[in-house]
Image (tube, rainbow, N blue to C red; front, side, top):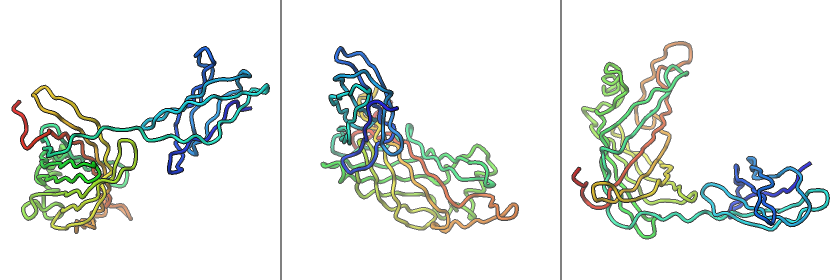
Length: 271
């Protein structure tokens, strides 16, 4: 039998999986704990009868406290509890410059249908123009295509060849971001245009803000993580070697992950 029950939702009505319900007695001693399932439903074991304090918490949301009345049977109901997104302080407005020494782009593709092969692009540069409000911010990044590194020189040469990136004809990969749409307390989607292998296509980057602060060189830094999925055929990269019945040597879907540090201002600090 359950004790205290409830349903945890966002302001938009979505469930909040993994929200934590903590129950304390009037002296402040914890007497129960429960975790919400995928539907946002949460419950505890039966509780002592009387008045208790219920606190609901979740990453990215403001906590909510409620007084819970528990019956003689050890049960009670909170009903629907709405959690508001936590306030995240965005970086100050202005130009921010990507620091190539502390930024990385990783591309992951399936190999032979069973394993993931990662390629690292270390040479990335660009800027982020923070606006007020933050959702109007824009960005631009350039990646040196020839800088691809999988750890195997023969494979890297093949990826640089006309069968894949064709770096002689298309030396740079560029992305221009056109604003942000908030999706959570510290997450956004940045729509924009990606130019790769001579093809320009709209994509969405799922962006997570990691925070900002002073660095040891007198500058102010902010960190972002971004992800998207690309399809090689959308960019005219149609290498389709088949190693056995129906299994391609390299998968057509590629996951892109960016970990980027930006420094406030037009220039990077001297290190």
